[in-house]
Amino acid sequence: MDVLQVQTLLAKFGFDPGGLDGVMGPKTAAAIKAFQQFAGAPVSGVIDDTLTGYLGEWDTAGRTKTSETARAENPTDTAAPAANKETPVPTQRTSTVDIGGATVPFGMRLIAISDPSGSDASQVYYLIGNVFGAEVAYEIGDLNDLNATFGGLNNFGDFSTWTQKQFDQRGIDVLGSVDEIVGTSETLQAQFERDLRSAGLENPPAWLASSKTAMTVYVNAVNEGWSPERTWGALSKTDAFKKRFDGLDAVMAQLGTTSLVEGIGEFVGRETAIRASILSSRGPGADTSPEYVSSLIGAGWQADEVAELLDLEKRVKANPAALDNINQILVFQGLDPLGADDFISFLQDQDAMTIDPSHAPGQVFEAVNDALRFQALIDQGITISSEFATSLGEGTSETIVNAGTYSEQARIAAIEAARNADELTLGKYDLTRDDIIAATFGEVSPTGKSTSEVNELLMRMGRERAKAATGFQSAASYTDALGRLRVQGLSNL
Image (cartoon, helix red, strand yellow):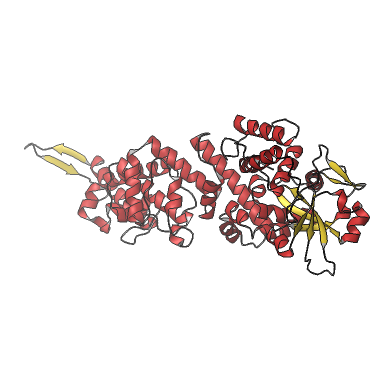
């Protein structure tokens, strides 16, 4: 049992653990000690197999602190327990218990099914135990089988009688026959932990252990030796799995795979990388909860793409004035504006992110790049419209471009526009300032001119200016007798 399960049972029995928060604090330890002392268990204040056994006994027997106190105060009440009252094997302090000469794991309890399906016997008996919070059962058989193995009902003391319907409703997984666990020197939990280690697996993670339904599937898979694909396939139908791997469908669609093993491997890898990026950018206090990270993965974003946005977040925080210009472009393109304190929320706020291709990461990156180009030109004294800024980068981008690159391109655009200011004013060769800007960034201009066309026109204008300058410099001149300037031998005319 984990801490939360123990706290829940302690509260149920009347021992205050100080809140159900899953944290092993001093109040929880004190409640454990109080319960152990009250139940006659070894007092340790820690969660171990012995405590789990005692808690399981009280839980299945329906005991509370109040009822136990009342029983102690009325010792004449010796009535036999009701037939449907579930009473476990007598409490032991070792990992096994001897019943009629047969040794079974500690904490196992006997139940009888009064109307067993698929059997001619009037009753069928099971030993029930707890593994990682899941109830599991091993079949003993009919009364003859019980007598042969355990020497009769008297060796168990009290036991529970259920209907087949009651048994089925509890979701108990029948793992095999009781012969598989008789004679062991380990608890049932210890056996499964050993099987996990021998299979190269680890104990169930918290999300799995917190769900009785999922744990029942997992325990059965381990017991039966299922393949990883089959195990994940069965787990994928549980609510615990769907919550834990929210967004897995998007990952598998991107991979083009139907293999859960492959999809989960990629999902966990992205999760780890995204969490590392967030911690690196925002520090140890940042939110890296599974729910938060899964929401990003479910939106279709990969780890390197999230890292790009986090890097932009840092850049804008260093230059807050740029945020308004960036948002002007984003809003113009129909996207939500960025918040200076959390660029990642930008990814989550695009309501159609997973179904509208225009909101795919590449499109978002292009919108951000448009905004960065826009800002770089403004920094160089060049004002353009949001529409023109957007047209400079139609399509998609794989990354967010380094701001320094845009700054250099904007500087070149500003120089070329100033150098050719007279020609632009005269409309020579039908060349405009916007043509020069577009060519500088490697884009087709608003008038349809390609980068090479614009560059060729700029070179022609440059040659003409050079020719004019060279012609006057090489001319011979003198002042005649009347004081007039005479120029002769103009070259290149």
